[in-house]
Length: 401
Image 1 (cartoon, helix red, strand yellow):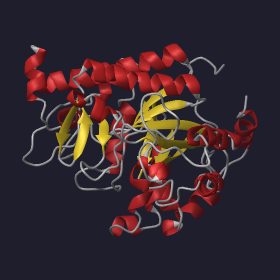
Image 2 (cartoon, helix red, strand yellow):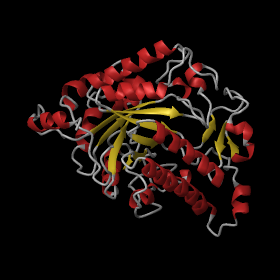
Image 3 (cartoon, rainbow, N blue to C red):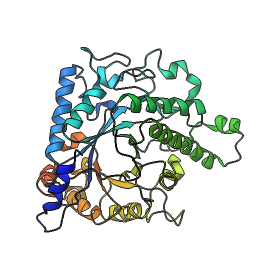
């Protein structure tokens, strides 16, 4: 087993404060490709430059004690790999549909380099976003938005797949299945964008789809059922192809506010997963449709409306036996008084380690580490993540074949 040695090292050693560090802990980093947030660097289309930059980031994260990379490979109905369904991403080559030159397969390259370092690779996909900026994105004539325009809805400045369309659901499932079948990914990962965040004064334009459905459900329950459906289908497809491959979701921090639902958290979020994004995360956990949840707890300890500690406690109590990895906001360094405090992030890690049902962290995002904000790279390398840790096992999944 590739983590055999790391496991025993972590068992034998202790941290400076005398407490045994977790021998199993998920320590991930999000690498966002949309709009060239983290990788590739905007304008750097030469494959050798792209490879060198990805390796630089991997080595940096390895030095900081990380053991997992969550890499965005399908940001907007496009691909960072040769796909039979979708064109090459504009954020890879500058022009949608244009292959890398000289040719290489970025996904294969990234998986191999990640695995060389005994890290796991989670392939991050956006399920519904199809055109990042209407009129401003590079779109090829054979893009799905052009060949199947009836599948899409415009909302704000973006174009989205219609979540109610069964052909859309199957298309997304086919994309996922293709990735799992052809690549040695350790997980499929999706973030918080299901139905889009509400835009003030604008309703998502699915009235016709709802009417045509003849559903007896309320519109809100109907929307939730549409998302439930694709989550269940994706999980089934993954497990049928490679039952050891995980399926994880990284939702917004609040499922529902307690003021609306007694099962909800002690929070005052303006929008929530259940009521606005139509993502019933608790149902997915309860039904075992996902293997882990990574709630984006991007606010500080003691925040007046969405307190890190309260939300941490809530997710810990509502995991239904699945793994919980906390989304950590290293990108917020210096944004306010709390995030200027060099102890904020280490204190958050100390807190989450007190919860048996919380198995680790994922940090947003990769580029935030470049300048060692608040000395946090040093804190991770020399203290929090000084000792290696193995990826937490999921006993409900079979061993990788």
